[in-house]
Image (cartoon, rainbow, N blue to C red; front, side):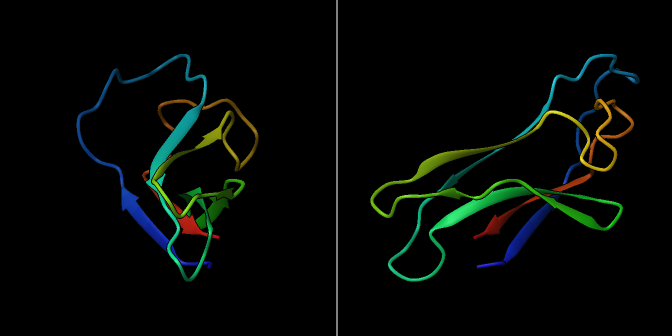
Length: 94
């Protein structure tokens, strides 16, 4: 529990200024093993600070889709804009 794996977000860009971002969603497919953590969560790393979502238990029999959602920017509870989207996201064993 407590291990993190993060990814830098790069790639195609959209419009220069998006005016309406409803939420940020992170999807992962996870399955627990016979030993170790039995839950997972997503996290955003913004300016070197980790913002963890609520952990979700995952089964050991089959993989399960786990969604982490941030309706607003966790830094200051403001609406997301194209300028405030994180450049690093990840998964956290819980």
